Length: 98
Image (cartoon, rainbow, N blue to C red; front, side, top):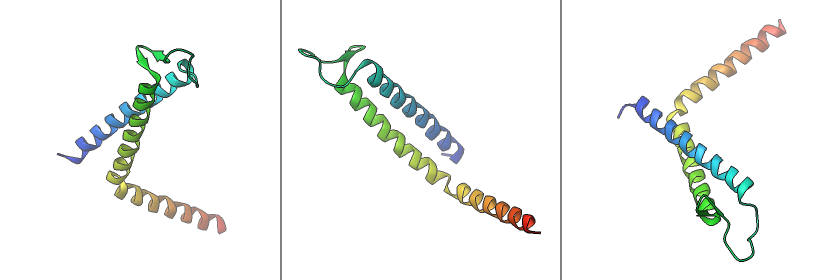
């Protein structure tokens, strides 16, 4: 598969896992407060809190893995850009000294 297509799908999956992680985090923060209710489970949209936590954790792990893959795929570009930026800063500092 061509590298741009791989990058595209990695980015799409990163976006989806970020949205899921963010949404489940907000659901747990605002609709499923800490602690256990007396006599029952905490339920939101028919899903118990334990399952919301599991979805949140696994989508976060998937997001971290995809970010790592994204950085690996772009490592050459990042190294090149860092060198270019550092050279520009060096040139700017030399011109200020004169």
